[in-house]
Amino acid sequence: MSSVKRIGILTAGGDSPGLNAAIRGVGKAALGCGIEIVGFRDGFRGLAENRMFELSSATLSGILTVGGTVLGTSRDKVHRMVVDGTATDVRDTIIRNCRKDGIDVLVCLGGGGTQRNALQLVDAGLDVVTLPKTIDNDVALTDATIGYATALEVATEAVDRLHSTAHSHHRIIVVELMGHRAGWLALGAGIAGGADVVLIPEIPYDVEQVAEAIRARVRRGTNFSIVAVAEGARDRDDARTYREAEARKDAAGSLEEKDAARAEIAGLQAAHAGNTMRLARKLEELTGLESRVTILGYVQRGGTPSPGDRLLATRLGAAAVDLVREGRFGMMVAARGPVTESVRLEDVAGRRRTVPPDHPWVEAARRVGTCLGD
Ligand code: F6P
Image 1 (spheres, rainbow, N blue to C red):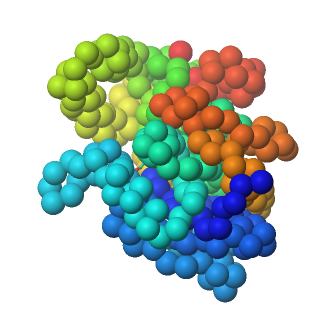
Image 2 (tube, helix red, strand yellow):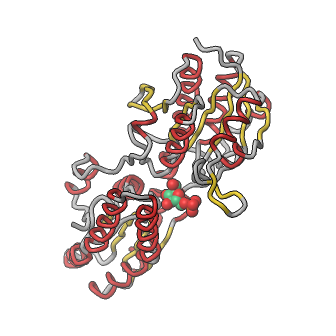
Image 3 (cartoon, helix red, strand yellow):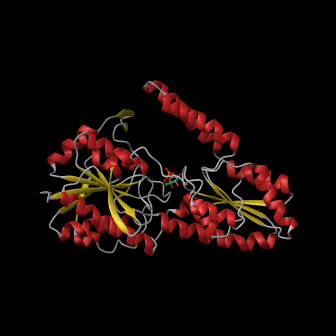
């Protein structure tokens, strides 16, 4: 057993439902075994600026069902935080602050970027434990991330609701779902909501194939279609250009080359904005059916967490405290079915869990005749 007396906790990256349930899970489990807990505001920025406050049983009560994060969040990076207009490595400042304030272990709740930040702090000498949260469900080596279950429910309900209006007006409705560069949310909500076409980043699409699937439905007498498209989905040409830019980034020898490749990728991403509108217009042109677009956006991230997310957050939160007590640092708590495991941060950071092309959900979608655009 470690001699940890005080832990700090922060949430970073995009907010997601269930974050407060996880903060409460960690906090109550810690207080329950005599460990003090303090919260840092606004992610790694608040940590660097030492904006902390004591978490007590009273502050942890009543937050289980609340959306967002009571700690606040940001997308700052510990090795490149913008301070007075300059990208600054704040790791030493963070470690000094933690030592001064008697923080023995830092618990970080976040997605891929947070896992990378956490590893940077581990490498700089801090004891850290992390939890996976993101509506994108794309953190490596865990079956589930906190927030995905709720986002899936919200997105599925939206796809359900779009059916009646698409049907009534004999239209194509193209609905864009979040997910960053993974298709879990679009695929999950697309299957659960019975979308006719599901387009995800892992399967580059051909717009002609999508149009043909819609025309085939019309030939069978169904003159409406729902197209669920992940925000990161790309057609075959764009996917190739993007892959090549990524390869240049990976092969970059110097920081300058890497930055140039990053700028190129950012340019491609900017050019990609509006893609869903372009897709809808193209489908209208190719099928002769009127089309409309719905971008679900941040509604997928907001509001009360589902029971599934509350359960996941509570169990992962309590398990994080077990790791702290056992002195097992540099680890992320992971869900493996109903079991909770720990995985090494260095095996998680920098990796993204995407939808395997032979995933059972992909196969099931194909079996029921859903067009995946390929
Ligand atoms: O990672 C969660 C997520 O909601 C992604 O699905 C989306 O691409 C991104 O965050 C949006 O980021 P921001 O909150 O910075 O607009």
